[in-house]
Length: 250
Figure 1: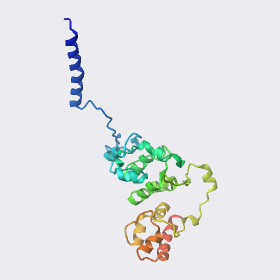
Figure 2 (figure 1 turned 90 degrees about the vertical axis):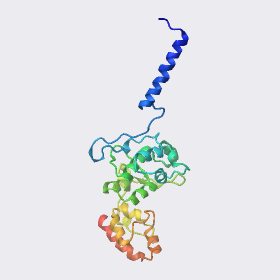
Figure 3 (figure 1 turned 90 degrees about the horizontal axis):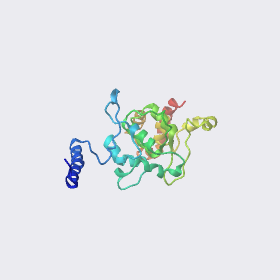
Figure 4 (figure 1 turned 120 degrees about the vertical axis):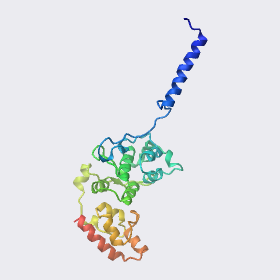
């Protein structure tokens, strides 16, 4: 049988668009990528999304859909100012921190999400730094392991998108290891010491709460300012906290 051009055109139309309709109905056809990270396949976290699979093309909204974290928390952690945090793409972080001298981007977000949600994350795969704003949020969350606190202590940078940066001392910097000498002066509570400093030094959050008789304050708050605001004697509180510091930093 010989087909004329008109019937042939009709058949091609049916095959093409009928196939798309069938694929859509069966869930086989997608016009956009789903942007869902892979999941852990074994252990106690099996079935949960893996932070290590977060991609630069993901938005904060995509991450919020896959993990127990909000776009607003992510924006606050990485000092992102936008009216719509959910639409911010992870890959755009590198441009924001381009002049900082440090690579703060996709892997920083992966580590932050893992630490914040309590999910596993391999710290040996890639050297990763975290802005101080992100570390403060993680410390306030209070679910970090000693190993994670130790890592943040040497991989946190005090930098913002508009302020000069201070280079961190990291375990991977040979020069820093040769010239830097720890002293008790570094771990002495002073007027500028914050509660975040105490946590980074290794003082347990529970001990701090016991000594101040209240929940853990904002990690960025200075101990002296907290004492003044709550009618506490700074010298008395400082002595008690210093005793705890000396236990972990003899």
